[in-house]
Image (tube, rainbow, N blue to C red; front, side, top):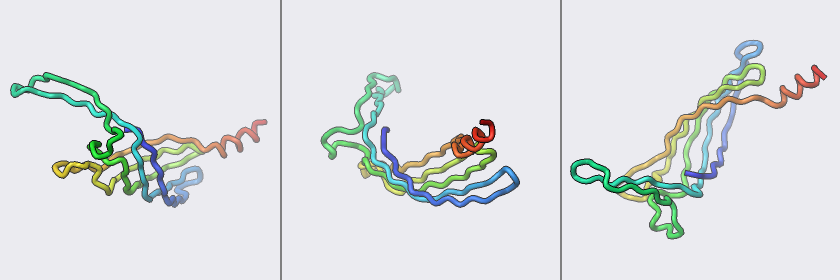
Length: 130
């Protein structure tokens, strides 16, 4: 899926040691899917693949799309930061059933990891060097 995600999070941080801090993040998000593809395989009664295909997930006829374009939910994270380098872990929990079929239930669940660097500290260190 290709989508646009708008997160809105509150972040609370506190120092653990002289050069180490911890930050907790929590909030919501809204997502709108722009494009996507679905891979399909057809099997015979013996389990052999008899046909495969890749089709667009979304078409101009919204009633034919198997998954809703809009999703919303909660997002949580924790970050450890030292010397401007951050290591984060996040969890996303969708609250909306994005499947349009009454026989199928689908919700967003994802884990993420991030490595970051604070550019403000880079500017500070460059000033000290130059």
